[in-house]
Length: 416
Length: 96
Image (cartoon, rainbow over all chains, first blue to last red; front, side, top):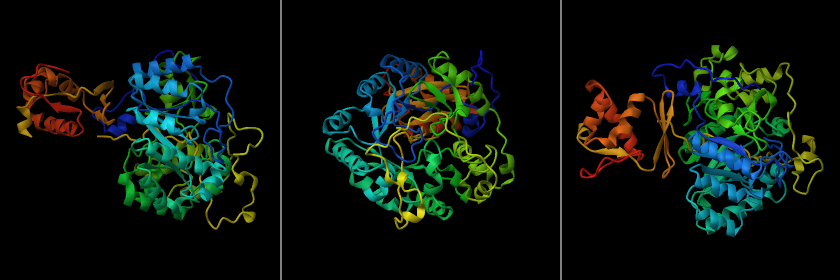
């Protein structure tokens, strides 16, 4: 983690394509993810940020306002707020209003716990806020398996409160898993029922997700089901550009089909640490700290790590693959947290190279931070105590988990 | 397309342009659309649209060679579709 004294000059192609320009980085992120707190009322099995307990060094209200001021100066027009569960921060509603008042639009991810009729009415009266409710099963059985008992009802109540208040176009955010991948039509029906838009994202082996990835990530044949469903329904469904590894099936899905880490997106965590992407909370992807390193802009522009990510990358073994131009080797975080080399195939490579790589020798990196609660609470998903698959027969269903932090910064973005 | 050259346009009041090394990012605070202007010339053109009586004179002011006007008019058409730029009443003064 080094911040360079001066911003390196990056040689970029004249009149290159937009993708080429993005690969060389932008002056400011298109949109970033900002996790406001590690505290969470839930304990989702697959939480990307291993959230649970508040960190004592989380940004104060004043520090958070200063971040918003800086984002406004940098013309970052949009921020995805997550956590943890951001709405349980006492100043959450204040910061939301502060951001909107400073031309920084907000989409926040929540498990719905604080979206009561009163807050739903408040949200409905604000023009510049998007709400994303996390739901990882179209039924309580599938959802609560990973997100914990009662979490399905909490999410559905929040959706109903939003609808009753006249809030338009909430998002239902789903992490696609082995257990819910056959529920995609049911998710869509739920979204239609609540006047919401469905958003699907990829299960990453990040945070606590590393512990359950083997059991939750879609099977190879399910990747094809997912791809076909997205091709058929993709126009009305958001993906946050999450599934670009599927492009190697031969047809690109809408979106950038590019890893934006440190180039067009990044993550600010609750203590002000800046990581390359929301799925890469690990020291290896830590660019700097906004408090210790002179502000977010300086970290974004002068971080040695980010400048490396903006230089030409080698495709390693993948560059020989005929589909390399489609998937570009897949997701950096998925590789890292499954112990695969960053210049090799994605663990879920649809051409099958990932399985070969996973079968080889690898060491799964430990977590750099863990804010999980030390003693199980009543919201703990049951699956954590049922570790042997033989004992757990859910007839092929299991549940998905997405924590409130599973936000993708490129959602809603269109490249012209 | 050529009809546009004689019309008066302007940057939409809800749009902000953020400079980028290759051009600019345009964000519409109303419909929340994000668009990239991939050429510095296009950024110059869009910025000065509102100061000129028609697109043709804006193109000249932005130093864009006549041979490229159709291509730039096409780009403007694309921006108009998402309300990044909008037509201006002829009697309306230079805005934006």
